[in-house]
Amino acid sequence: MHFTGAAGAALSTAVLLLGLAAGSFLNVVIYRLPREGLSVSRPRRSFCPSCRERIPWHDNLPVISWLLLKGRCRFCGARISFRYPLVEIVSGMLALSLLAVEGISPRFLCYYYFAMALTAVAFIDLELMVIPDLLVWPTYVLGFICAAVSPSPQLPGWYLWERLTAAGWSPWLVSLGGAAAGFVLGFLALYAASRLYRLWRGRDGLGDGDPPLLGLIGAFLGWTAVFPVLLLSTLIALLAVFLMIFSGKGIPQGKTAVTPIPFGPFLALAAVIWMFYGQAVKSWYFSLLGV
Ligand SMILES: [Zn+2]
Image 1 (cartoon, rainbow, N blue to C red):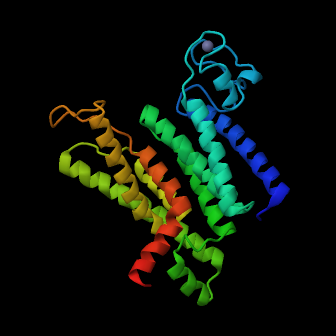
Image 2: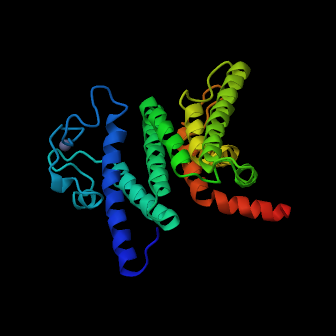
Image 3: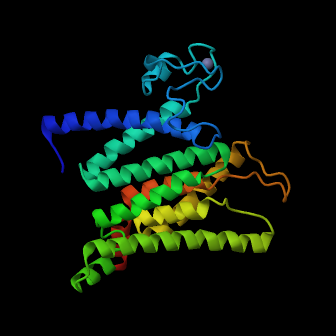
């Protein structure tokens, strides 16, 4: 459902505020999930990682508190990472953008949850070079539920969608099949790539979490998204490596010294771009082919 006028403005404001608040929660997930002894619900209150002092609610408002405190803890003066307001802004913008595209619908919730999981994966992988299973595997379940509850022609691709539904197949089954094919294709593509690389170079070129992550992307965006997302993420990663080399931050020393770069953030970024623009790119590509 889409709303216009005053109702639309009120809804957009509410969704933006909820998105910022969800981003605040996502910061807790990003910090606590990969750290032993901390769970998302315990301790209940947020605390400063430096001095362990409890953070009062008025210092915990999304973006605003970080700006008012000039990015420092009120008690010990330790720097608070720019990641905190950044995650909140990303979360708020994703909520607003998805509202504009999907309206208030089950698919809005599905894509928003997916984008939030990707955001968490990207920042955790960037910091710690690990993709927590707890973040990826439960999200699969949601991906398959979404495919069945809110059938999408993008999951099997329009070609199969039109032919299979015309042949009498249930839309939810065709949609779920597209998600399952996306999962299998995404997982196997990177799993095969990592095994081949290990055979060729005798060491790991990809993290253990990368194949399940591309599988997750396939489950939410369909099998047709797997290779475009892989290509796009590789291009963005190459661009990042060039920028690192030219800025002097990651000059490779000799042939054996390799600075490890996590691939997860690039997969996540490419998946979000494809979620918004994939359909437009596919239409443009097929128009070139004259289909
Ligand atoms: Zn502190």
